[in-house]
Image (cartoon, rainbow, N blue to C red; front, side, top):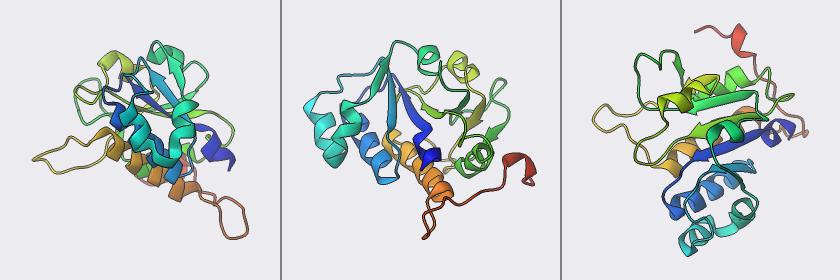
Length: 181
């Protein structure tokens, strides 16, 4: 599946080894295999290994970077995930809308979904490094998702948008520009 091979998940300064392990499992469930970690916690911690279960290969093959700019160096299509809106976070898409936007470009270009720290998310400067921004709609009473849950929701939308049909071909989606919004 060339599209899934071109999409990376980037975690910026993840703090919990267990979350990193659960992210690996979520990615593997949905056919994604490229994990990039920016200045992570201890990823060989027993908790990370325990929660990765059968996705330890993703954990062991994760690429490490000192900062987000380095992690994005080979990735022309990037999406910052955020739950905050504001002056510098204007046009924010849902995961499903992001998959539609990637449809025209992800087969030929590398793409990445970027997730921030568990306690504070991405900084404004980190969000600015990304082409698009996306959020998962949640209850107004409590909008903060666990990191691994958020990754799973994005990976699910990507997988369902690009999974192969019974004959082995990948479903084609309409390019984002042709969708009505």
